[in-house]
Length: 439
Image 1 (cartoon, helix red, strand yellow):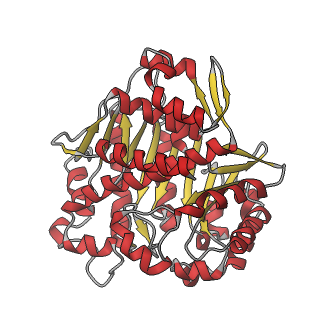
Image 2: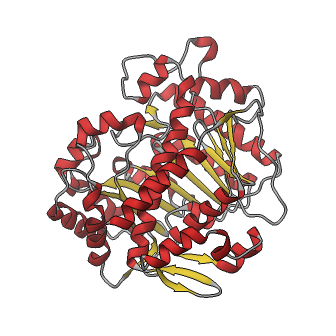
């Protein structure tokens, strides 16, 4: 699709320019602003298996380091509360947050004690869908998101997930068993793997629907410089030319009981919480190694080093090592993307927050979307999207998140050689530094 190629190249240029970080000696975050709503994100960077396409901050699991990390995470959470923040929603991502279920429950319980939490979302993997873990999370977690990616055994093998997480049929049975234990159970799927045929995609969609999950999120395969070679070696080179065809197949395959709730999420009607926290909460505080905070138009990035995380938190400071203050135009473009990811942009709110109409301030973006038939509704109050518009948002978000990995690559420059090796999945080296600086 020509419009997607133009959009991708333009965003690649603009986003790369706006995501250069500046080192910061500041060891805290700005305080909350009266009348604003914030979400709390907690990052758990440990996994049993490192997927070749994942560029998030993650390391091979080490139990001793994991227990210490959770303790430091709770200390950081207390410091955020001391700054005056309150949250109604908490999202625990990773990594694999359920890798130490006792520590995770203690962390969620502290969040419930410190803040007015109404909704807690948590990520997990299929092998953690067990009676014990699900029983511990039930009542604590309102939305459980299971990283499935595919039910096809060949794709699972390429992703290095088959041996640890089980065959596709086993994963499907596990989800069917526990799908009704949470107000919302989401499964994350990926489309446009190089070896994924149309037949495999169709079978994956059918399995996802049959899983009884209340929500299904279908992400395009995204590349990141830090894992590009490893991903090509494992799954092959991505063909973006067929991405739109696969996306259209996904959209047309869901029965009427499903409705799109974001550009890449499909929910059973009345199925619960939306997939992306960044849709409901423009501003958020991130805690943990490698977490981001977006506050007052600025991006605050925590250290990616587990050893640095230990030292900074134990010193009684919040872990901000890099910042990027966005200009007004960049903030407006971010709002444009995130609200339309949620399928509706509030034009009156946009005008109130930025001082003029979106047609005046983002005339180029509005003209591009209008000319390409992306708007289903574009009146004085709101914008909604056509199916073509939803795909353009998927392409925008794919490029945006791929470029966000530029931030992560900057953050990893200061990692020790041991930590860099562990990020790449070389687990023969020590996870943490000598005793004096262990996490």
